[in-house]
Length: 266
Image (cartoon, rainbow, N blue to C red):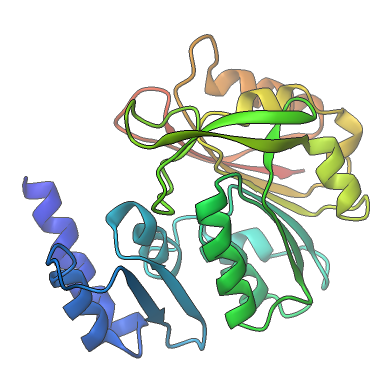
């Protein structure tokens, strides 16, 4: 309870700092459980970006994670990359990381993969609303170890908690197209500089079934790893070491098998 109250207090303090429409945001957050509350919330950031999300916690918290907490350390990720970096955002959710990269690196090209049809619709809307269609390509496709289709638990609310690790009963099961990391690299033109993974447990299958050649140009990786039976973070580190990428930082969460991992080419 204390932790929840502490987080809520921090969000209240952060809101005026990062949003132009902070009064409306605070009002919508405070009243989102009311039957008359609008189903969506729009965040107008002081950096000029605008992001619309369902007004539910699982959908909107990445806005704060990326733009208030900078959980992925964007400055580090973009440092020392080419002037026109090519980025794969695997698990794009409503587009926070993609928009942050495209805003911070005005010549970056981003290929964003989001499996959930509901979430991908918000992702596309946010890319278009920020006039980034020319540099951001949205793929309503799952990344997996093989081409075909993928069974996904879709919350229907653009929650970031879709996928293999979604709680039972948290949504409906849908069939979505899936593609491989190798195909994603090819779709990006064969050169990728930065990769971000947050695909709710599918990262192991996707990464371990990829070709080392697809990682040859990748300079940095940031990923959220999840508890999956028979898989460990050490397995990921061994794979990446074989393709020349080594840990820069590891932030394990309280839950075993869950955390964020940064890797770089040395």
